[in-house]
Length: 263
Image 1: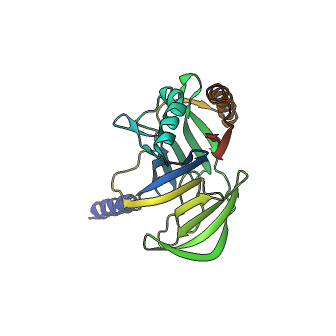
Image 2: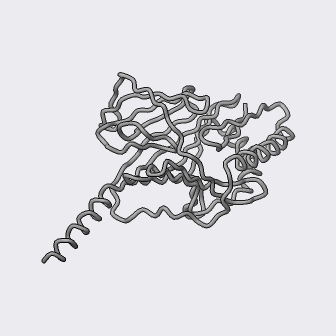
Image 3: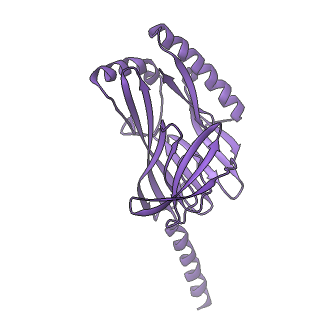
C-alpha cells in the first residue's frame, strides 16, 4: 500500500511538471526602410518554457526551408532584395535544430547555439552569464489577444525596448533573451519599431522538453563577436562593390547577433 502511495505521488509530481510546460509561438518582425520602400522580414520563433529553464528556437529549417518570409512594398524592391541577398543566402548552411538560446534560471546561465557564417563554419556553442534585466514597469495597460497587458520598458545594450506582459499567464519569460517580468511577454518592440515580437499562440505540452544541444564546438562570447565582426566587414565590402551608393551598417540587436542594414 505504501509503495503504491509513493508511486502515485511520483506520477502526480511528474504529471504536474509536464503540465507546467508550454510551447509559445512568436513572430519576430524586422522592418527595413530604404529608398525603395519598407521591407518586413517575419521569422517564426518558439519558446519552450518550464519553471527552471527555457529554450528559444529560431532560424530553424523545416522541410528544407527557413521559417521566414518577406513582405515587400513593390515588385522592384523584391527583385532588388533577391539580388542583394543572393550571395549571403547561398552560404547559409542552417539545419533542423536552428539557433537556440537556453536560459537556465537555476544557475543564471544562458547557452546559445549560433550560426557562424564566416567560411561556412556552421553552428557553435556560446556560454554566458544570464543578463540582468532592469525593467521599469509603467502604469499603462491595454488588451492584446484577450489578455490584459501592462507596459514595461528597458534599456538593453544601448537600445530602448517596450514590452507588454500579462500577469494572467504566470510565465516570467519572453522572446529571445528577455525575461524577468511578473508574467509572460505578449508583445515587444524597440524604440524605432524596426524590431518587434508578437505572440501568436500558446499551448501546454505533455512531452518532456529536450534541452540537449547538438555536439558543436564551444567558444567564448568574445570569440563569437570577433568572428562575426570579420564576416560582416567582408560582406559590407562585397555589397559596396555591388551597390556603390549604398550605406551599410551592422545592427547588434540582442546579445552578439548582428543584422546587416542597407540604406
